[in-house]
Length: 187
Image 1 (cartoon, rainbow, N blue to C red):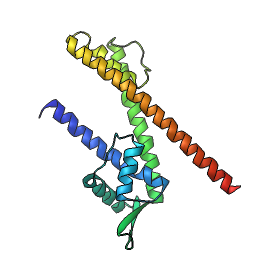
Image 2 (image 1 turned 120 degrees about the horizontal axis):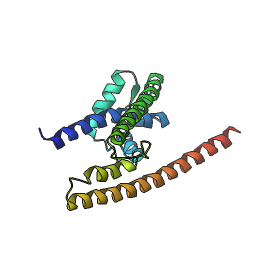
Image 3 (image 1 turned 30 degrees about the vertical axis):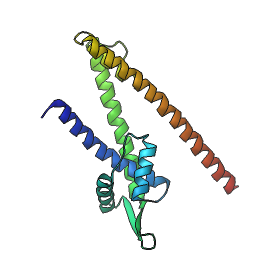
Image 4 (image 1 turned 45 degrees about the horizontal axis):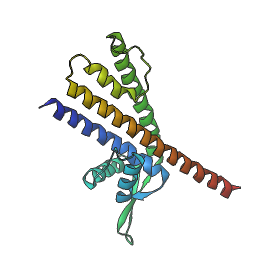
């Protein structure tokens, strides 16, 4: 098996795990049926995770079997509505905590090794700089075409980061307005 095939397989495996976390996350906002869950995950992950029916329904079944969500069949609508359970909320919080511990640990280790090899000077780089590291790592052995392509990808990555931040700011603003409205109703 080629390295790109192995990496693609690993990515698919990681996305399956993140899909379950994403299901729990969107169900924390409100109960949804399967198709709505797929749309919400795509929206909230800014298209990074785009579930298909072939991926979402096995994940829903597994989460339901583990009592992390509960499905309720609505005959009049001919669909199943899913709710997150209290166990699901606890598992989600724990999974998020473990994710950030793992991601932080791997990132710190990776940057420490690059600093030890004198490829970079600073260990505490912002995440967007990871793309720039590819350019640094390619500096000796890379052809001109590879370096140009790496720069193009870095530029695109920075543009995507700006777009993500813009969308995130909009979502934060929207959530803030929702909470203000909720607070006004409670008064």
